[in-house]
Length: 78
Image (cartoon, rainbow, N blue to C red):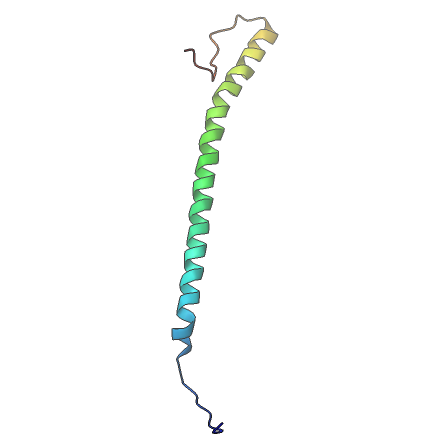
């Protein structure tokens, strides 16, 4: 109505700070989830490796005619 124009000067760091903080939180959270996933995959792989290795040794012993030792199984008796 009056034809006036108003402008406000604000440093760009002040405007961009929330966006940068959100990016750091997102990247940090993603890295934490990735690290936890890798640790969990390593742990599960380690628990699977023992019985499979025992089966491999048993199959080798059975194939060569040697007596089988005690097998390591993942199922616990109740």
